[in-house]
Length: 179
Image (cartoon, rainbow, N blue to C red; front, top):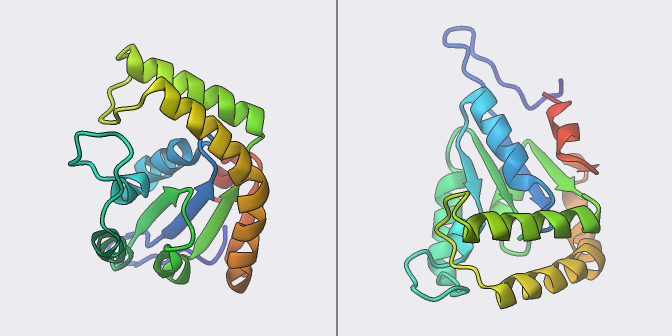
């Protein structure tokens, strides 16, 4: 265990602020959901505040001021798990986080998961509010390749000031090992 635990002797409540970042299909949502259920802590997917959920068109961004306000409201909570690919506008959560996990799942595994998730949503095996298209998924696969190369280097540089909080892992299961 590490120092992110704050346990009250009266109510045994766990205080935990975790930020998980990684490419699409890396396992962020999966592991955030597991930790959320394990400790009863709310889990937030940054896609839900970055992309407009009220738009009828896929791929419309939320206004930046609203996005930032929503992130700040989450960060002010006593405990949270935030996950997403974003980093340039997420400094409030990096500042407040007890631990920042960078998930570096192999790109081919990520691509497989992206395609599998798309098919499950289209076949309605898994419920989803996302209005993905095949061309959108193809664009995501290309974008993800770039994210895992150029953007990863940018991300590491951006997070240098938080090095004492950052842990790079290759599998989402490695994050569970810390709990």
